[in-house]
Length: 98
Image 1 (cartoon, one colour):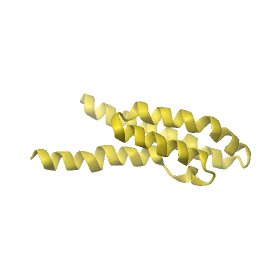
Image 2: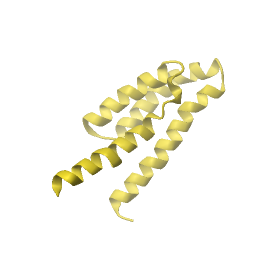
Image 3: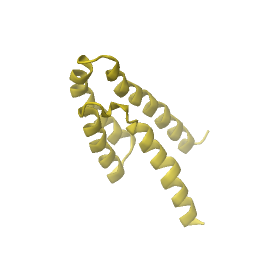
């Protein structure tokens, strides 16, 4: 595997794990919302480490808000960012360079 493929796969796996952690708070009514107070800033920081630049910063802010607002934990922000980065933007970049 090339370095780019390794990073794509690593980010996909980590993203699925982090989305699972975020969604797991829905399993513990009451306590889950309290745990989100700790998970939200960590998830936002992790997002900015996984995805650099303005897109990563914006995704970090969205992740922070999504994790703090009750009921929004169902949104898989890490997976959505992976799709945006590697499928949507990646395809657009290939079309432009051809």
